[in-house]
Image (cartoon, rainbow, N blue to C red):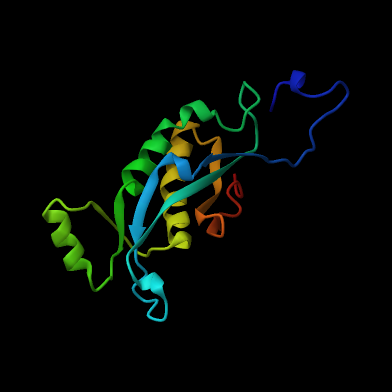
Length: 171
């Protein structure tokens, strides 16, 4: 429960409540990666193409910490490091991409770094980020905070959102 000094005099919190905050790592954060959606035979997206991805994490908690925060953004260095390790200057390769052997050969020759994922695209990236960052956030916050959603944007016009539901159900 947040400190009563955070509330105006005479005000109380509703019985059922969830607090949210979000952290955005914008396009300037440098998560520059490339990928191809090999199944998109009708589209130029089947070719290798890249973006400086933007990632927004939305945090959710039933209670605020002693500072009155959902998440201490100063404690997110492990999240940023994980994002950099997995997305910065990487070729993101679908595990079933038929061109996988060629990309692996380029990586063996030191021409690129690849990260093999079950699927590629903003939707898949949002889910992959959620899976990993939710675990990190639970560890950082002693399970007080969860990642409710992850938005990944290629640029201002294209993006995707993954939202986890009922994160505190059954507690």
